[in-house]
Image 1 (spheres, rainbow, N blue to C red):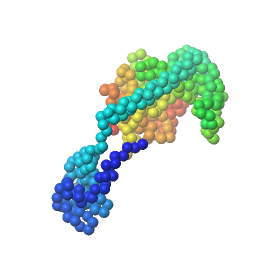
Image 2 (tube, protein in one colour):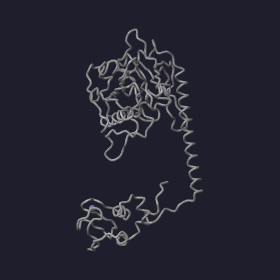
Image 3 (cartoon, rainbow, N blue to C red):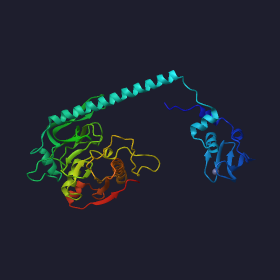
Image 4 (tube, rainbow, N blue to C red):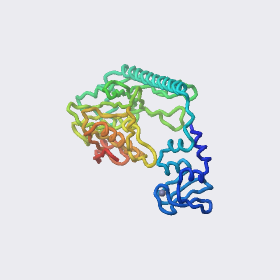
Length: 386
Ligand SMILES: [Zn+2]
Protein backbone atom coordinates (compact mmCIF):
# COMPACT_ATOMS: atom_id res chain seq x y z
CA UNK A 1 0.00 0.00 0.00
CA UNK A 2 1.32 3.41 -0.95
CA UNK A 3 1.10 5.94 1.84
CA UNK A 4 -0.28 9.12 0.25
CA UNK A 5 -0.18 12.15 2.48
CA UNK A 6 -3.78 13.42 2.71
CA UNK A 7 -2.42 16.95 3.13
CA UNK A 8 -1.58 17.03 -0.59
CA UNK A 9 -5.28 16.97 -1.47
CA UNK A 10 -5.91 19.69 1.10
CA UNK A 11 -3.17 21.82 -0.52
CA UNK A 12 -4.75 21.38 -3.95
CA UNK A 13 -8.04 22.62 -2.55
CA UNK A 14 -6.54 26.01 -1.64
CA UNK A 15 -7.34 28.82 -4.11
CA UNK A 16 -4.19 30.13 -5.79
CA UNK A 17 -5.30 33.76 -5.47
CA UNK A 18 -5.50 33.38 -1.70
CA UNK A 19 -2.11 31.75 -1.67
CA UNK A 20 -0.57 34.67 -3.60
CA UNK A 21 -1.86 36.89 -0.81
CA UNK A 22 -0.47 34.69 1.94
CA UNK A 23 2.90 34.52 0.19
CA UNK A 24 2.81 38.29 -0.44
CA UNK A 25 3.82 37.83 -4.07
CA UNK A 26 3.72 41.41 -5.32
CA UNK A 27 3.00 42.96 -8.71
CA UNK A 28 0.62 40.39 -10.17
CA UNK A 29 -2.17 41.76 -12.36
CA UNK A 30 -5.40 39.97 -13.03
CA UNK A 31 -6.11 39.47 -16.75
CA UNK A 32 -8.62 37.07 -18.26
CA UNK A 33 -8.50 34.12 -15.88
CA UNK A 34 -4.86 34.75 -15.05
CA UNK A 35 -2.60 36.55 -12.64
CA UNK A 36 0.39 37.90 -14.59
CA UNK A 37 3.55 39.67 -13.46
CA UNK A 38 7.15 39.29 -12.30
CA UNK A 39 8.41 35.84 -11.30
CA UNK A 40 8.96 35.45 -7.54
CA UNK A 41 12.16 33.62 -8.41
CA UNK A 42 13.72 35.29 -11.45
CA UNK A 43 11.94 38.66 -11.63
CA UNK A 44 11.12 40.36 -14.94
CA UNK A 45 7.88 42.11 -15.78
CA UNK A 46 5.28 39.70 -17.16
CA UNK A 47 6.98 36.35 -17.60
CA UNK A 48 5.09 34.75 -14.74
CA UNK A 49 1.46 33.64 -14.86
CA UNK A 50 -0.98 31.79 -12.65
CA UNK A 51 -3.89 30.08 -14.38
CA UNK A 52 -6.74 30.55 -11.93
CA UNK A 53 -8.90 27.99 -13.68
CA UNK A 54 -6.38 25.16 -13.65
CA UNK A 55 -4.74 26.37 -10.42
CA UNK A 56 -1.22 26.07 -11.80
CA UNK A 57 1.59 28.55 -12.42
CA UNK A 58 4.32 28.85 -15.00
CA UNK A 59 7.35 31.07 -15.65
CA UNK A 60 8.38 31.48 -19.30
CA UNK A 61 11.98 32.30 -18.40
CA UNK A 62 13.17 30.09 -15.52
CA UNK A 63 10.72 27.32 -16.36
CA UNK A 64 9.32 27.08 -12.83
CA UNK A 65 5.82 25.62 -12.85
CA UNK A 66 3.44 23.56 -10.80
CA UNK A 67 0.76 23.47 -8.16
CA UNK A 68 0.17 25.22 -4.83
CA UNK A 69 2.95 23.30 -3.09
CA UNK A 70 5.40 24.10 -5.88
CA UNK A 71 4.48 27.79 -5.62
CA UNK A 72 5.34 27.81 -1.90
CA UNK A 73 8.61 26.04 -2.71
CA UNK A 74 9.39 28.66 -5.37
CA UNK A 75 8.41 31.71 -3.32
CA UNK A 76 9.97 30.66 -0.01
CA UNK A 77 12.83 28.47 -1.27
CA UNK A 78 11.60 25.42 0.65
CA UNK A 79 11.72 21.74 -0.13
CA UNK A 80 8.51 19.76 -0.63
CA UNK A 81 7.90 18.58 2.97
CA UNK A 82 8.62 22.03 4.41
CA UNK A 83 6.32 23.69 1.85
CA UNK A 84 3.55 21.22 2.66
CA UNK A 85 3.93 21.87 6.36
CA UNK A 86 3.93 25.66 5.84
CA UNK A 87 0.69 25.32 3.85
CA UNK A 88 -1.30 22.79 5.86
CA UNK A 89 0.57 22.33 9.15
CA UNK A 90 2.35 19.30 10.48
CA UNK A 91 1.16 15.84 9.72
CA UNK A 92 -0.99 14.28 12.42
CA UNK A 93 1.63 12.75 14.67
CA UNK A 94 1.49 9.40 16.40
CA UNK A 95 2.20 9.25 20.13
CA UNK A 96 5.75 8.27 21.12
CA UNK A 97 4.39 4.92 22.35
CA UNK A 98 2.67 4.27 19.00
CA UNK A 99 5.82 5.23 17.12
CA UNK A 100 7.96 2.95 19.27
CA UNK A 101 5.59 0.05 18.72
CA UNK A 102 5.59 0.69 14.97
CA UNK A 103 9.40 0.74 14.91
CA UNK A 104 9.60 -2.42 17.01
CA UNK A 105 7.29 -4.27 14.63
CA UNK A 106 9.16 -3.03 11.55
CA UNK A 107 12.47 -4.21 13.03
CA UNK A 108 10.99 -7.56 13.95
CA UNK A 109 9.67 -8.07 10.41
CA UNK A 110 13.02 -7.04 8.97
CA UNK A 111 14.80 -9.53 11.26
CA UNK A 112 12.42 -12.29 10.13
CA UNK A 113 13.02 -11.47 6.47
CA UNK A 114 16.79 -11.39 6.97
CA UNK A 115 16.74 -14.70 8.83
CA UNK A 116 14.62 -16.30 6.11
CA UNK A 117 16.95 -15.02 3.39
CA UNK A 118 20.00 -16.26 5.32
CA UNK A 119 18.42 -19.69 5.79
CA UNK A 120 17.47 -19.84 2.11
CA UNK A 121 21.04 -18.99 1.15
CA UNK A 122 22.51 -21.52 3.59
CA UNK A 123 20.17 -24.26 2.30
CA UNK A 124 21.10 -23.44 -1.30
CA UNK A 125 24.83 -23.56 -0.50
CA UNK A 126 24.36 -26.85 1.39
CA UNK A 127 22.67 -28.39 -1.66
CA UNK A 128 25.45 -27.08 -3.91
CA UNK A 129 28.05 -28.54 -1.53
CA UNK A 130 26.30 -31.94 -1.71
CA UNK A 131 26.47 -31.85 -5.53
CA UNK A 132 30.12 -30.79 -5.43
CA UNK A 133 30.97 -33.60 -3.00
CA UNK A 134 29.45 -36.14 -5.38
CA UNK A 135 31.90 -34.99 -8.05
CA UNK A 136 35.05 -36.87 -8.98
CA UNK A 137 38.41 -35.56 -10.23
CA UNK A 138 37.83 -34.25 -13.75
CA UNK A 139 41.10 -35.34 -15.38
CA UNK A 140 40.69 -38.16 -17.91
CA UNK A 141 36.90 -37.90 -17.85
CA UNK A 142 34.26 -36.64 -20.28
CA UNK A 143 34.99 -33.12 -19.00
CA UNK A 144 38.21 -33.16 -21.06
CA UNK A 145 36.29 -34.38 -24.12
CA UNK A 146 33.61 -31.76 -23.62
CA UNK A 147 36.15 -28.93 -23.43
CA UNK A 148 37.96 -30.35 -26.48
CA UNK A 149 34.64 -30.33 -28.35
CA UNK A 150 34.35 -26.62 -27.50
CA UNK A 151 37.84 -26.04 -28.93
CA UNK A 152 39.59 -25.73 -25.56
CA UNK A 153 41.40 -29.00 -24.80
CA UNK A 154 43.87 -28.90 -21.90
CA UNK A 155 47.48 -28.79 -23.09
CA UNK A 156 48.81 -32.32 -23.38
CA UNK A 157 49.99 -33.59 -20.01
CA UNK A 158 48.45 -30.62 -18.20
CA UNK A 159 45.85 -31.18 -15.51
CA UNK A 160 42.47 -29.48 -15.58
CA UNK A 161 41.97 -26.55 -13.22
CA UNK A 162 41.02 -27.72 -9.73
CA UNK A 163 37.73 -25.86 -9.91
CA UNK A 164 36.44 -28.64 -12.19
CA UNK A 165 34.90 -31.96 -11.19
CA UNK A 166 33.06 -34.68 -13.06
CA UNK A 167 29.67 -36.05 -12.08
CA UNK A 168 28.84 -39.30 -13.92
CA UNK A 169 25.09 -39.13 -13.50
CA UNK A 170 23.18 -35.94 -12.85
CA UNK A 171 19.46 -35.31 -13.13
CA UNK A 172 18.27 -32.32 -15.14
CA UNK A 173 14.88 -31.24 -13.83
CA UNK A 174 12.31 -28.53 -14.54
CA UNK A 175 9.60 -27.30 -12.15
CA UNK A 176 6.21 -28.89 -12.78
CA UNK A 177 3.74 -26.04 -13.38
CA UNK A 178 0.83 -28.22 -12.25
CA UNK A 179 2.28 -29.28 -8.90
CA UNK A 180 3.89 -26.74 -6.64
CA UNK A 181 7.37 -27.66 -5.40
CA UNK A 182 7.56 -30.71 -7.68
CA UNK A 183 10.01 -31.26 -10.49
CA UNK A 184 10.06 -33.36 -13.63
CA UNK A 185 13.25 -35.10 -14.67
CA UNK A 186 13.91 -34.40 -18.35
CA UNK A 187 17.41 -35.82 -18.73
CA UNK A 188 19.94 -37.90 -16.81
CA UNK A 189 23.59 -38.07 -17.70
CA UNK A 190 27.18 -36.97 -17.10
CA UNK A 191 27.96 -33.41 -16.13
CA UNK A 192 30.86 -31.00 -15.71
CA UNK A 193 30.90 -29.30 -12.31
CA UNK A 194 32.67 -25.99 -11.69
CA UNK A 195 33.15 -24.52 -8.24
CA UNK A 196 31.98 -20.96 -7.64
CA UNK A 197 34.18 -19.28 -5.04
CA UNK A 198 32.94 -16.34 -3.00
CA UNK A 199 34.88 -13.10 -2.41
CA UNK A 200 36.75 -14.85 0.43
CA UNK A 201 37.79 -17.66 -1.94
CA UNK A 202 35.57 -20.18 -0.16
CA UNK A 203 33.04 -22.47 -1.82
CA UNK A 204 29.66 -20.80 -2.28
CA UNK A 205 28.11 -22.58 -5.23
CA UNK A 206 28.46 -24.91 -8.14
CA UNK A 207 27.87 -24.55 -11.87
CA UNK A 208 26.72 -27.71 -13.60
CA UNK A 209 26.92 -28.32 -17.38
CA UNK A 210 25.36 -31.50 -18.71
CA UNK A 211 27.47 -33.26 -21.35
CA UNK A 212 26.24 -35.06 -24.46
CA UNK A 213 28.99 -35.60 -27.00
CA UNK A 214 26.44 -36.75 -29.58
CA UNK A 215 25.39 -33.10 -29.91
CA UNK A 216 27.36 -30.51 -31.89
CA UNK A 217 28.01 -28.23 -28.89
CA UNK A 218 28.59 -31.17 -26.55
CA UNK A 219 25.46 -30.51 -24.50
CA UNK A 220 22.12 -32.39 -24.43
CA UNK A 221 19.31 -30.78 -26.44
CA UNK A 222 16.15 -31.45 -24.43
CA UNK A 223 12.77 -30.06 -25.55
CA UNK A 224 10.98 -28.34 -22.67
CA UNK A 225 8.04 -30.51 -21.52
CA UNK A 226 5.89 -27.53 -20.47
CA UNK A 227 6.98 -24.76 -22.86
CA UNK A 228 6.32 -25.33 -26.54
CA UNK A 229 9.31 -24.87 -28.80
CA UNK A 230 11.73 -24.21 -25.92
CA UNK A 231 14.90 -26.13 -25.11
CA UNK A 232 15.79 -26.77 -21.46
CA UNK A 233 19.09 -25.08 -20.58
CA UNK A 234 21.80 -27.68 -20.02
CA UNK A 235 23.53 -25.39 -17.51
CA UNK A 236 22.48 -24.69 -13.96
CA UNK A 237 23.83 -22.77 -10.98
CA UNK A 238 23.32 -23.96 -7.38
CA UNK A 239 24.13 -22.10 -4.20
CA UNK A 240 25.01 -18.42 -4.18
CA UNK A 241 26.77 -16.83 -7.14
CA UNK A 242 26.61 -13.19 -6.01
CA UNK A 243 30.06 -11.70 -5.71
CA UNK A 244 31.54 -15.04 -6.71
CA UNK A 245 33.50 -16.32 -9.69
CA UNK A 246 34.71 -19.57 -11.21
CA UNK A 247 38.45 -19.22 -10.66
CA UNK A 248 39.70 -21.06 -13.73
CA UNK A 249 43.29 -19.96 -13.83
CA UNK A 250 45.24 -17.83 -11.33
CA UNK A 251 48.99 -17.74 -11.99
CA UNK A 252 51.27 -16.91 -9.09
CA UNK A 253 52.24 -13.26 -9.61
CA UNK A 254 49.17 -12.19 -11.55
CA UNK A 255 48.13 -8.56 -11.30
CA UNK A 256 45.66 -8.63 -14.20
CA UNK A 257 42.29 -10.36 -14.08
CA UNK A 258 40.42 -11.21 -17.29
CA UNK A 259 36.78 -12.12 -16.81
CA UNK A 260 34.14 -13.32 -19.25
CA UNK A 261 30.67 -14.51 -18.38
CA UNK A 262 30.86 -18.19 -19.27
CA UNK A 263 33.37 -20.95 -18.57
CA UNK A 264 33.95 -21.76 -22.24
CA UNK A 265 34.39 -18.15 -23.32
CA UNK A 266 36.80 -17.43 -20.45
CA UNK A 267 38.88 -20.51 -21.24
CA UNK A 268 38.82 -19.54 -24.92
CA UNK A 269 40.26 -16.15 -24.02
CA UNK A 270 43.02 -17.91 -22.13
CA UNK A 271 43.68 -20.37 -24.97
CA UNK A 272 43.60 -17.71 -27.70
CA UNK A 273 46.34 -15.73 -25.89
CA UNK A 274 44.56 -12.80 -27.53
CA UNK A 275 44.19 -10.69 -24.41
CA UNK A 276 46.94 -10.80 -21.77
CA UNK A 277 49.59 -13.34 -20.96
CA UNK A 278 50.37 -13.88 -17.29
CA UNK A 279 46.86 -12.77 -16.36
CA UNK A 280 44.34 -14.66 -14.24
CA UNK A 281 41.21 -15.87 -16.05
CA UNK A 282 37.98 -16.18 -14.09
CA UNK A 283 34.40 -16.71 -15.28
CA UNK A 284 31.86 -14.27 -13.81
CA UNK A 285 29.01 -16.84 -14.01
CA UNK A 286 26.50 -14.29 -15.24
CA UNK A 287 26.43 -10.76 -16.52
CA UNK A 288 24.26 -9.53 -13.64
CA UNK A 289 26.89 -10.65 -11.15
CA UNK A 290 29.64 -8.88 -13.11
CA UNK A 291 27.55 -5.72 -13.47
CA UNK A 292 25.83 -5.46 -10.10
CA UNK A 293 22.85 -3.12 -9.74
CA UNK A 294 22.98 -0.16 -12.08
CA UNK A 295 21.52 3.30 -11.61
CA UNK A 296 18.42 3.33 -13.77
CA UNK A 297 16.00 6.06 -14.74
CA UNK A 298 15.48 8.48 -17.57
CA UNK A 299 18.35 8.28 -20.06
CA UNK A 300 20.40 5.90 -17.90
CA UNK A 301 19.64 2.55 -19.55
CA UNK A 302 22.93 2.49 -21.44
CA UNK A 303 24.93 4.82 -19.17
CA UNK A 304 26.60 2.02 -17.21
CA UNK A 305 26.63 3.78 -13.84
CA UNK A 306 26.89 1.42 -10.86
CA UNK A 307 24.48 1.67 -7.94
CA UNK A 308 27.04 1.62 -5.16
CA UNK A 309 24.45 0.56 -2.60
CA UNK A 310 24.64 -2.97 -4.07
CA UNK A 311 27.20 -4.63 -1.80
CA UNK A 312 26.82 -8.15 -3.22
CA UNK A 313 28.17 -7.65 -6.74
CA UNK A 314 31.56 -8.89 -7.87
CA UNK A 315 34.60 -6.88 -6.72
CA UNK A 316 38.08 -8.07 -7.73
CA UNK A 317 40.51 -9.15 -4.98
CA UNK A 318 43.21 -6.81 -3.68
CA UNK A 319 45.97 -8.17 -5.94
CA UNK A 320 44.17 -7.11 -9.11
CA UNK A 321 45.65 -3.92 -10.59
CA UNK A 322 43.98 -4.22 -13.96
CA UNK A 323 40.54 -5.69 -14.61
CA UNK A 324 39.45 -6.66 -18.13
CA UNK A 325 35.90 -7.73 -18.93
CA UNK A 326 35.23 -9.62 -22.16
CA UNK A 327 32.19 -8.44 -24.11
CA UNK A 328 30.83 -11.54 -25.77
CA UNK A 329 28.76 -11.56 -28.92
CA UNK A 330 25.24 -10.74 -27.84
CA UNK A 331 21.90 -9.78 -29.28
CA UNK A 332 21.90 -6.60 -27.14
CA UNK A 333 25.46 -5.23 -27.40
CA UNK A 334 24.61 -1.76 -26.02
CA UNK A 335 22.99 -3.20 -22.90
CA UNK A 336 25.79 -5.72 -22.41
CA UNK A 337 28.33 -2.92 -22.66
CA UNK A 338 26.42 -0.81 -20.11
CA UNK A 339 26.46 -3.72 -17.66
CA UNK A 340 30.18 -4.31 -18.14
CA UNK A 341 30.87 -0.59 -17.67
CA UNK A 342 28.85 -0.62 -14.45
CA UNK A 343 30.88 -3.52 -13.03
CA UNK A 344 34.22 -2.03 -14.05
CA UNK A 345 33.34 1.40 -12.62
CA UNK A 346 32.18 -0.21 -9.38
CA UNK A 347 35.53 -1.99 -9.14
CA UNK A 348 37.44 1.23 -9.88
CA UNK A 349 35.45 3.17 -7.28
CA UNK A 350 36.10 0.45 -4.69
CA UNK A 351 39.78 -0.20 -5.50
CA UNK A 352 41.61 3.10 -6.06
CA UNK A 353 44.39 2.81 -8.65
CA UNK A 354 42.69 -0.03 -10.53
CA UNK A 355 42.56 0.37 -14.32
CA UNK A 356 39.97 -1.31 -16.49
CA UNK A 357 39.23 -2.26 -20.06
CA UNK A 358 36.71 -4.07 -22.25
CA UNK A 359 37.78 -6.55 -24.91
CA UNK A 360 35.49 -7.39 -27.84
CA UNK A 361 35.94 -10.52 -29.89
CA UNK A 362 33.88 -8.86 -32.66
CA UNK A 363 30.27 -8.24 -33.63
CA UNK A 364 27.98 -11.19 -33.04
CA UNK A 365 30.69 -13.63 -31.99
CA UNK A 366 32.08 -14.69 -28.62
CA UNK A 367 35.58 -15.61 -27.51
CA UNK A 368 34.88 -19.25 -28.29
CA UNK A 369 33.95 -18.41 -31.91
CA UNK A 370 37.04 -16.21 -32.10
CA UNK A 371 39.27 -19.00 -30.87
CA UNK A 372 37.80 -21.41 -33.37
CA UNK A 373 38.17 -18.91 -36.25
CA UNK A 374 41.59 -17.52 -35.23
CA UNK A 375 40.52 -13.84 -35.36
CA UNK A 376 41.70 -10.92 -33.26
CA UNK A 377 40.08 -8.80 -30.57
CA UNK A 378 39.63 -5.08 -30.19
CA UNK A 379 39.95 -3.38 -26.83
CA UNK A 380 38.78 -0.20 -25.19
CA UNK A 381 40.05 1.62 -22.09
CA UNK A 382 37.35 2.39 -19.52
CA UNK A 383 37.32 5.55 -17.42
CA UNK A 384 35.89 5.67 -13.96
CA UNK A 385 33.36 8.38 -14.75
CA UNK A 386 30.72 8.23 -17.43
ZN1 LIG B 1 11.05 32.63 -13.23
